[in-house]
Length: 530
Image (spheres, helix red, strand yellow):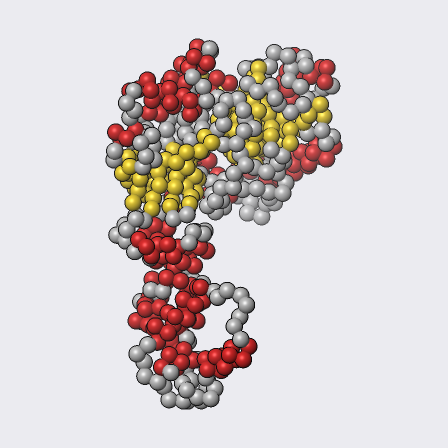
């Protein structure tokens, strides 16, 4: 009866809800469905929290005036629906709230709803670790490192995805498929993991090498930057020395042996990458990257793509849209064009109509068409600069007039933007659903299995440079849209073709908080290698 008084607040009176419910249940018989274990735990916890209290007198039934008058199992439901970050403050209100917040049901729900932990958390009881420990010492503590990151590995970069995986937080390094199979799925391998083995603190383990997990360390430098360190680098070494390590790395990275690669320049690039990246096997710094925001007006969905880059193999590129421009930014790079640089830029205001299939095979004919558009773009830019200069001069001469109309430069810019956007939209509407496509004779492609039809083409520029990112320059090219998941780019000066295929992975915690935050991120990763 003491439990009844505590839960219902009306004691052993005729209006007791608990006794009434029990009588109703006896009349109806046992339920067909299995009992809700969480709900049963809440009822048991409510009874436990109410034990030891004297039976209350039987006052008239009334609505509770405060949370303290509610049944404990109802408070468990209420507290479990609140964000986990608010619960410590709630625990400081009173001893009753503090006792209720020790209920594991509350923290099990927060782990599931906030971090997607779908494992059977009841198994934790075997190790003596509570759901509250998992939330506070693992999930909440390392929440800032969840999402997409770019490691600082010189020009090579990379793509790291940190996720909650069961009762672990794991950092997966994503690798492009083996060259030149650009349509194959991404490969991935674990670099580190964090888990809770005991109640004291979370354990960080390095997963690099072939000797299993070993002691590691993570330091969160700031909100958008963290670093990892291996404390047992001997686990990275192989008994066969550097030669065995190189052969193993080559099979993982390229899917072949050095003897299979006949191109001498390609062999040099591969050996250079192995030597350079091996220096970072014990300590790495990561900087956050966001997926590009999308808009219904975009030519195709922005996102991450795998692309062919000649002797450098496959690299990861982020495609984003910026009004009348589209940009391809390297997430992984090479000694010529490092990660973070803008590899291609597409001018959506200048579509290109391809010639018929026979003339398309002629490289000189395609080159002539692209260079004509390049000259047109140059004249338009020159004219715009002259008009802006004239507008600035007129604005200075009329600076004292506070009642003057809006400056012509703003009207002209808006008009130009509207005209160009309308031109791009008109090009999309007038373009056929598909048209035959073939690479011109003499254009080199790493992958001959490219689409033979395309939707649209636009003028664009590609970034080329010497080794060490020396003498970078933007050169004309043509962007080819094949379908929703593939596009290509012909580099006129290099007589080379790059094929790009979408990375079809659902990345969590990777959305930019705003367009401004995404643009700032692009500037930051580009400045790292400039």
